[in-house]
Length: 434
Image 1 (tube, one colour):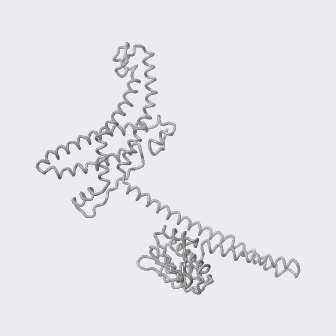
Image 2 (tube, helix red, strand yellow):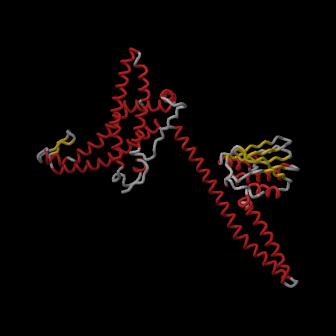
């Protein structure tokens, strides 16, 4: 039976564990642990004895550093052994020395916590854990195997008359011998779970002591950031797809319907029918205008076709407050950055129109030192609070996904200044909005 479990704990919770390779992998993990632990014990004791003997002449004191570093190879071997029963690798990143050379390497190793955690595990492994591994393997394998072999022992060593079970009980009849063998098979199945539980617990203890918490945390942060970027890209792609479908589908049909109603109204004689066609034509025109506003809010086509400068100018023209635009871009940023910057400007202008009481606003920006920056300033009353539901909180999260920064300054009495920056490079294509 093929098992897709990633570790022994998951394998034991599924049917077919006894027929899989996991019991044997657990036994191999514990057996190699017994051998490795015995070697580690001999090595650590030998180095400690030599250092202690040489310490009399002050030569062995520097060699004690070798004992402190002995946990590094032991932990590295343990990380490889854990792969027998857990397919998830154990992180073990050590700090990179600030300078080349053995002195910098040694100083870095002695100062980091990972080295001392690995030393603690090596001492625990050499002094306590490997005898437990050896005991569990001996009991869980030899006891049931010796019981299963009772009929064979009785036929060979006992000349068919008797056999010793675990060197404790004497079996003199064949039915009893086969009964002991069946009991040994049942006990072997139980011992397989004992091996799995022990190996899983040992691996969890080792992972707890030797895993690099900084490395795992860093890996999780990187993966979280990547997943957020992937979500933003997927969200922008979906917005563009919806905008394209509405623009090329529903909007075109509605335009055709409006034109047909207009022509029908012109051809209809005066009367109730002409009045109804007039009302239908007006409603179709209103629906078309609303659809265009909806499409523009989802993802403006001017942003896709002409870039950020044209889209910002279009948003400024549609704002009820007069807006000056001073935006110079020699190229176009990446689509996620361009879209996020545009919606930050739109949200800022919407807040200016609704809450600021300003007479005039200004949008400025450009690209300098590998960063796109935009500023939205108004001469209103100030006192803007992002936490009061202005919509800037969600935009700040969206900006942070792209490693950008959003800052708002709005003292009572004004003016209000919103600044956003994105690290990005511009493409060679010039902004066609010019």
